Length: 258
Length: 71
Ligand SMILES: Cc1ncc(C[n+]2csc(CCOP(=O)(O)OP(=O)(O)O)c2C)c(N)n1
Ligand code: SF4
Ligand code: SF4
Image 1 (spheres, each protein chain N blue to C red):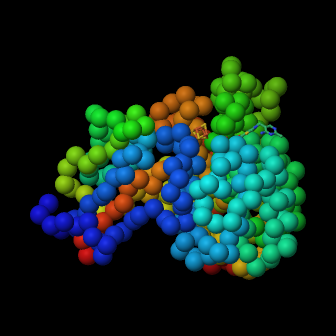
Image 2: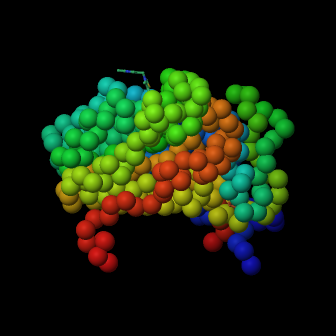
């Protein structure tokens, strides 16, 4: 190429300033990084860095507070929606989000998740569902697929003894307290763009005080699925998406009518 | 004619996950035979066909790619 294009006026994408410069501790190709990145981009685009408070979970994303340059609070395992409830009630003008894995949100934190959504707390819950406990070494989660092997279901998840994978997102969509509920992914460019739009809408809706916004991101765990990142994304499309189909599950009333 | 673009890769932060490779519509990216300080093979540009579409950058979990496009 003759011309040098690398100059500020040609810039079309760079890492958001809402992400700190710390190197992410996530495994190569893990969707947590992409999910963080687009949430940071949305906070930047909405210009709400100083008004945003995040709540970090226990799980691989326990260190999320290192990566977002916004006020953050760590919660005990599964308690992020309860902690976020407290923060939002004391500071209702702030934008409050939780960021949680499926072990955190759908196992130990099931009660907090369901009751925060049922009360219709004006918070955003970001739910990263990789169907496994990543941080602790790949144990079965409530979201682990039928037949899926994990360190605690070495012969595959069996419905008879272990029940069926729980669809938290469909579950909370039924509660009158939720306002916007959607399921997205971040493994391909088109999915990233859609997921980012969903996060943006969800934070914008927080201003309306109409209830909980819940954004699931179906994601991968290459390390514990024991696949390369690219294989894990293919496996996710073939196996996770049929059970956890992508798309909006509950739209705000007036948008439904349009 | 398609616009020209270019990318800058922060190779020391790249973990060689290869997710960007398939995201590029013009096969601009490949893994280097060399490794970075962390020991990962990192993404490199292998041709000049970049259009600055940003696909690679937005699927990168580690935000290592910066994208430029001619105006
Ligand atoms: C009270 C308590 N019980 C159990 C644990 C162990 N533990 C840490 S992370 C985790 C599960 C994390 O899985 P998930 O929420 O799916 O997140 P991921 O690591 O997959 O992103 C568990 C059980 C803990 N830290 N505290
Ligand atoms: S263990 Fe799984 S969820 Fe955790 S950082 Fe690694 S790939 Fe991501
Ligand atoms: S910006 Fe688009 S064309 Fe250029 S390297 Fe990235 S994916 Fe390929």
